[in-house]
Image (tube, rainbow, N blue to C red; front, side, top):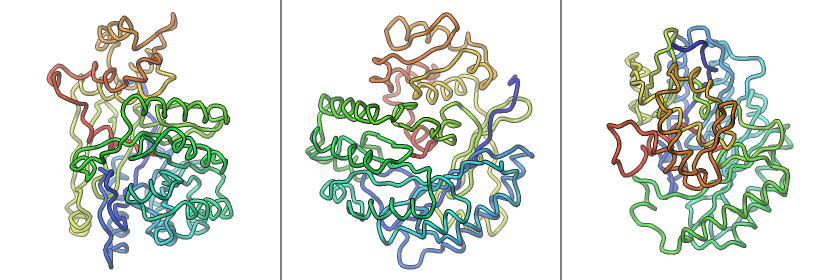
Length: 405
């Protein structure tokens, strides 16, 4: 039994993009010439009404509007969505409301209108400041458009901005990667997400990998050098790929990593919820935008909560919490999962003995430097017995749960 209800967040998925990037495995769809943006917003508002019942009066502490490319939607669309949230749910007065945006001219909406609508945190998908790298990643913006987008955001009054930077890109060497980090730091954002390009199933890059990706040793050198530059510039690493100025950590993503609850609206959006009895379950909305719209219009979007077995709850907690270098106190595991520490004690001990975890006399567990370097291996140790022998952690789960910034 869980002693108290976890914090509650809301994820809003806007799935349309100008084109699909070859590395992207998120639920995104080409907008085409006439995307049904208006119909999609109306479907979201219907979905929000249904989700209000799941919220059961609990306060929404954070909202993340992700995609896709949310900045394809107008400021008026975003205002309608946020007003819809506020009308049917208990939205905290100081709620962190993040929206993803791309720097491309045709993808970049009116930053001032987004700020006026209530967005108070912007996440810019820069990825790189190198024109060749951006082209190979399938991005439709160039380096100058990143600078313009950032300037637009600060002029609009945004004082909480994340910049996404990827490393280990095709053809990238150490100096190129450091140049990307240095240019991101020069803009002085409050938050930088610095993460490695990975080849995920169901992507173009997975089917036809670039032939000049950095090897494992170079990837590690690039990562370490980038981390050093970010720390020297005053950014604190609080998650495997997230760095923030003091007081500027992403509250929304921290809620994911600490196994909080979150409601989900939009095509393909995932939700996780704890009920009053302490049972934990997940649900997922239909993936295709048109199917999602049609079901919302027909009033047939009835997605049941699928309860999780205790062993799956324990694994999902560890899958997320081990991304945090700060780790977790033993009582936090029990509070968030409703399970005794004995359910994972044997694996904790083995991971500690193998140098992947460390603990103190107060019972606070943290990944070691070795554990962070081989994080996937560390996480896999907590897989339920029924899944042992699988070749990898369920990437669809781990990638869909947390937006980049």
